[in-house]
Amino acid sequence: MSSSPERDNAERAYVRAHLDDLHADLDAWLRIPSISADPAHADDVAASAAWLAGALTRVGFPIVEIWPTPGAPAVYAEWPSADAGAPVALVYGHHDVQPVDPPELWVHPPFEPTVVDGEDGPELHARGAIDDKGNVAFHLLGLRAHLASTGRDTPAVTVKLLIEGEEESGSPHFAALLAERRDRLACDVVVVSDTGMAARDIPSAVVSMRGLADAEITLRGPAIDLHSGSFGGAVPNPLHAMASLLAALHDEQGRVTLPGFYDRVRALTDRERELMARVPFDEKEWLAGPAASRVATGEDGFSTLERVGARPTAEVNGMWGGYTGPGHKTIVPAEAHAKVTFRLVADQRPEDVGPQLRAWVEAHLPDGIEAEVHTPPGGVSPCASDLDSPAMGALLAAIARAWDSEPGDVLYLREGGSGPEADLVDVLGAPLVFLGAGLPTDRIHSPNERVLLEMLYRAAEAAAHLWRELAALPRDTR
Image (cartoon, rainbow, N blue to C red; front, side):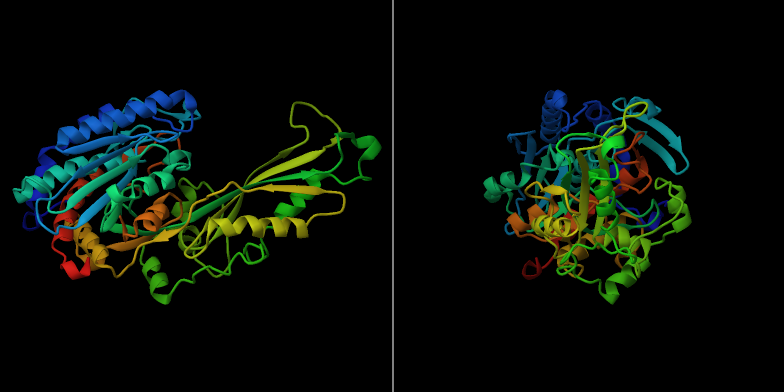
């Protein structure tokens, strides 16, 4: 969307005049292969944290610290406002990235940032380009734009950043870090920058993220693999039992069959469904895109957008057992295994899923088959923004200004993925808003991840507006 003279502003002018700084930051940071899931890259994750700490110091943050954890380090920064009673905003993001496998599918090396001319303008290709280094980097430019456009030496709000290093590994130490550093992290609003928007020219904001619970199921039958000629058809086959078990995970209406699974699910209101329906969505185009699926399917009575962003799910992620090598090995296998994950929505709790799954598995076991259900502790809780909070109003105003629109035109998105945002709410007790520059077409977690550079420019401007909008809120509404 092109800017018009009457809508130009000092924040935009500064951002557009300093794009080379953003490009240089990303070119340096994206070259660090900070893959937290691979222990071989532990030094790279530490180097990524050190790079970010140096960049934040260069921007002008007077307080910059690297916080160690039992895993990968997080980066904390704070720039206090000189204004008495100024609100405190905490920006959350992460500096670790996904593995690049399979490397042969990358057109350009994943850690050599490359600018490509795309249909919608220049694109930056690299692992982490948007998830999440791009989403963090635009804040560095946005804060500078805020200071320059307002003539201030300190921000209009106290700005804190917490950029963790283990999000792509499930944030195993994040909740403990929050609890340990609660006093330092106290804030009036949390700004999550690990999401995106509906499309390049559609101003929008994520308002919720789903939770996650995972499990591994093991079924055991005979004590050892058996000759299928001598025992096949006469003893229980764990793989047969697993196939039947997983086939029963959903009913004919596409609903998860675990008893009690829907008891806590908060139903969508008419208003929420209407807001979701406003988001432009071409299902045929969606199916032909990254989904690469022949049909859309799922729970009856809900649209595809509602299924993806606002309804709970159960997915079989993998199933194995017996012999899978070349040729034949005619056996009745001793064991079968499956991995299952559950996406959760408002009011569901991940700790409830394990008991529900164990009870369901036991109820569906055939004679002669034993089951073990492993559900790791923790999980991820769902989270949502208050659509009517003053902080949400400030966010909508900031996004609208950057996209030459009006706050009432900003659309609401529900993110189907999961992250540690609920921990921020639980520990810090602050409202949550989302400001991100990603697009559904950015191939996040896939080969050839990219970011549309124009989205980063707009998001940097929106961040600059956000600090001014939050500072202008009446104190009794914060």
